[in-house]
Image 1: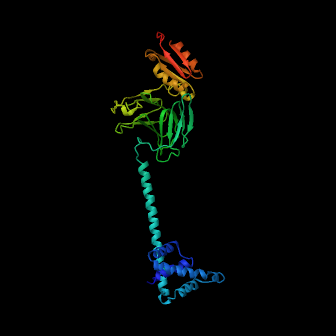
Image 2 (image 1 turned 90 degrees about the vertical axis):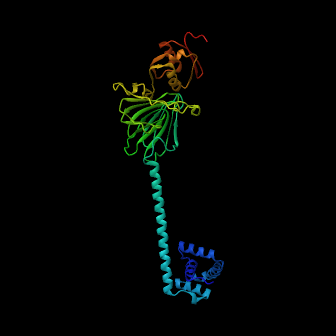
Length: 374
């Protein structure tokens, strides 16, 4: 079987080193399909290599190189006429154009698909489903930290808390997940809302200063707005109307059973009725003196709190463990603040205000009523 005119043309281009990538690929495909054709090509290639040394010293033209191939093959009568050669060349050129069109069309389709996929993931997305987050800021009891997020937002993270977020804030929204307490000073960006996911609620803002408190043991989630405007929705109830907070307002949301218990598997899936209230704060009180935000200024404030609730704050503030030896002492209530006091000074001050007994053993503090002897 003699090679076709097109095959001879591709062989000539390949042996002379002038074949384009698609021409070379086409030739190799033809050779793989025909062992006989591959043998002929190998013979031509060997003969061509033997005469390359002579060509190095002459200004050989393309016509001379092709002529030598023809002489080696000794089949001049099978060669295409000049017009035929030109036609084949035009056909290959058109084929190259078609290949490029297909390639670019495929690339365009890929880009369109990627754009569509990105839009599906980022536009109209349910904010109750935060994307996978990679960065984490965690604080131990007895410490607080300040950090800056990728968009320039400043966050103070209170003791025993964890904040996770995406390191690049990629996408149509800026999302973080909070466990514990944090104070946010959000950089304003109307086109990319800032969303805090915590305790079964989502807090959506554009540019705002606010505090969020949601420790695992807390029965409520508190959001205190200092400046700006926030929108609060519940994660498990998208039909519920959002609550909007204005400056000097605090939203207190009752957690569900599941949200308030770490061992969710053994708890009933029943959800408590949605209970929340909006409290109006005294605008004349300085931010540094408010119970909700004093911790940002390195001071622990408490007003009318029973000992059981206050104990959680003291444990995080001083990195201690508090053990109540009777239930009665848990109901004692306190007002005050601590800033630079040691843990012993703090408990002595509390005891002076409302009498009780306590002992400190390392990081453990045992508390009991005055009339309890054991």
